[in-house]
Structures are given as structure tokens and as C-alpha cells.
Image (cartoon, rainbow, N blue to C red; front, side, top):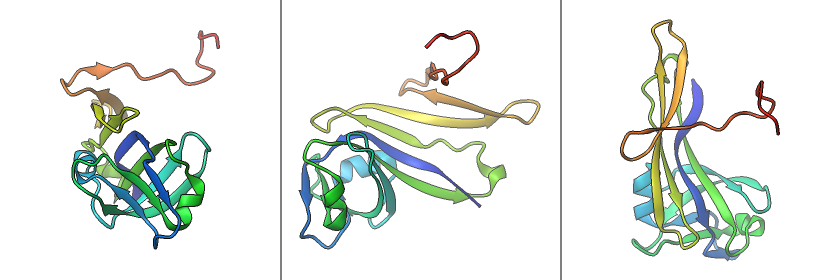
Length: 154
């Protein structure tokens, strides 16, 4: 079994850090549903401001609140306004990755959804993996070049 991306909330901002709660991250159910994140599901949290990476579970806050409350010990890793990536995972056999289409929900500084993307994995005619990022209209987006790509100056 391989652990792969199931869905992501990209750029969600911390609305509160509550050290005295028992743990977890509290998220707006609308955001969770959009990204395919379930209540009590373990997620990884990557803080774009501090570089901290933590794991915790999700509890649902008030629908429509746009909340992102980091609770318990995890609150030590985040400050109000920090930009996070919250990612859930799925486990599947390697041969099952073709056809996987996780949702990536991008949020603005007020935690409004601004874009919903799909990561798409498929196999070409030779059985090689292909990867694409599609917008809501199904248009394939350019994937950034990797550092050191031939012919590209950085």
C-alpha cells in the first residue's frame, strides 16, 4: 500500500490557536467537504510561515465560519494568520494510483475558496504514469519546472 494525497486545503489561514484544547484542528465543514476531508480523519499540516510540519485529526467547526483553529500542542506551531496546507491521505496499491483525482482547494487570506483544482494521474499507452493539474473547467494547467531543468536559467 502506498500513502498518497487524498485532498488538500491550500493556503488556509489560521484564525485561532487554542493551546488549552485537547488537540486537533477545527475546520469549516464546507472546506472539508470541498477537499474530501472527513471528521476525525488524520491530516498533515504544513505551515508555510514557519516550516513546521505536524499531524493531527480534524474536528468540524461552525459551517460557513471559514475557521481554521489549531488546538492543543499543535497550537505552539502556528500563529494567527499563518498560511497552512492541510492534506489528507489515502492508502492504495501502487497499481491503483491511475485514476486518482484528489481535490486541491485554494483559499484566500480570508479563507474564501478561490480555486478548486484536480490532480489527475493516468497511464499512457506504454503504461507510464502521466500527471496533470486541471482547473474547474477541466483545462490542463502548466506544471512548474523543477529546479535544474535543462535549458532553464534560475
